[in-house]
Amino acid sequence: MPDFQLAQRLASLPPYLFAAIDKAKEEVRAKGLDIISLGIGDPDLPTPDFIIDALCAAARKPENHQYPSYVGLLSFRQAVADWYLRRFGVALDPNNEVVSLIGSKEGIAHFPLAFVNPGDLVLIATPNYPVYGVTTEFVGGVPMYLPLTDENDFLPDLDAIDNDTWKRAKAIYVNYPNNPTAAMAPRSFYEKLIAKALEFEVIVVHDAAYTEMYFNEANKPLSILEIPGGREVAIEFHSLSKTYNMTGWRIGMAVGNASLVKGLGKVKENMDSGIFQAVQEAGIVALNQGDPYTAELRGIYRERRDVVIEALKKAGISCRVPEATFYVWSKVPQGISSSDFVTKVLKQTGVVTTPGNGFGVPGEGYFRISLTVNTDRLKEAVLRISQL
Image 1 (cartoon, rainbow, N blue to C red):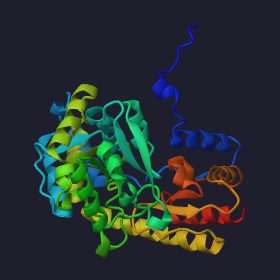
Image 2 (image 1 turned 90 degrees about the horizontal axis):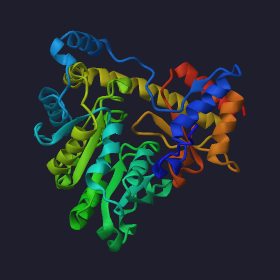
Image 3 (image 1 turned 60 degrees about the vertical axis):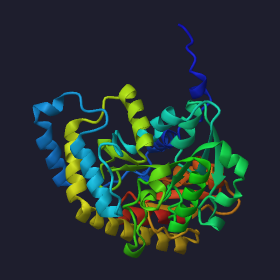
Image 4 (image 1 turned 90 degrees about the vertical axis):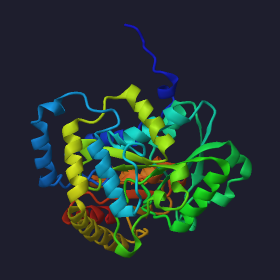
C-alpha cells in the first residue's frame, strides 16, 4: 500500500487544540468517569424556538433548495447592516461592506488567501484563537506574536512594535472581547491601533464574535468600525453562533472596508457555495428579533460566572472577573504547567478545561473554564478541582 505523505503545511502542524481535548475526554469517559466538559466554548442551551420555526418554514421553500449566493442573500446582508446600525451606530452598505460566512471561523481561515502573500509579516496578539496563525502559515505568511499579559490588561503593547516592523506588517489580528482571556478593549486602544494601521497601511482583522456576551450595560464591547478611521483599515468578523446559540448552524458575517470584504468574497466564490438559504432566512429572524433573547442569555452567563468566581475564590484559585465572553481565565497552582494541570484535572476528576498554553506561549500558567454547563454542574466541577 502506498505511504501517502501529508503536505508540509499539515505535517508541521501540532494537533488542533480542541480535537486533542476531545480525544483525551473520550479516553477518560471510556474508563467510566463522569465528564463535565468546560473545554470548548460550545453553548449548552438550545437555539430558541422562534429561530428554529423560521428555519422549518424556510426549508419548505423550493427556491431555497438550490445553490445559494456566494456572498449571501441581500436580505441577510441587509439584516446584518440593520443590526450593526442598531447595535453599534455603524451604517454599512449591504452590497459592498457585508459578506456572509459559513461561521466566522471559515471567513477568518479564508481571509489570508485574499491578502497575505508568501513572506508577508502578520502580527497576531496572543494568547489567541489558533486559526489566526495556522492559516497565516498555510499561505506562506510569517506570524509574529504580540504577547498579551495580565500586566498590560491583555492588550498588545502597540508602542513596543518598532517602526520597521510596522512597515513590514501586512495585517494585525486582534480579538475583543478576547478568547481566551475574556479581556475587553477600551476605545483608546482602538484609536491607537487605527492610527498605527493608517500610518503604516496595515490591515486590521478584528474577531468580534463575543461582543454580545457582556455583563455591564454601561460598558458594552465596541466594534472597531464605530471608531473614526476603522472602516478605512479594518475587516470585522462576527457570528450568530454565540449570540443566539447557533454554533452548529454555521452562519456568520464579515463587515467593514469594502475592498477587504470584496477580496474575501472573491476567495469564497472559488472555495465554497455559500450558506443554505433557509439558514440565512432563519438568521434574518435572529438578527431582527433576537435582542431580548440575547439579553436573557447574558443573565444566565452572568449567574454562571458569579458561581464559578465564588467557587474558585473559596478554592484559592486566582482569576480575573470577566466583563465579557463566557470564559473564566484562571491561574494554575504554582509549580505545575498548564498542560500538566489540565491533564491531572481531567484524569482525576473528569472535568475538562483548556490549558492556557494551547492558545500561545503567554498562556502558560493559566487555564480556561467555559461557562457552558448549568450552575449545578459548574459548582460540582469547581468542587472537584478544589479537592485535588
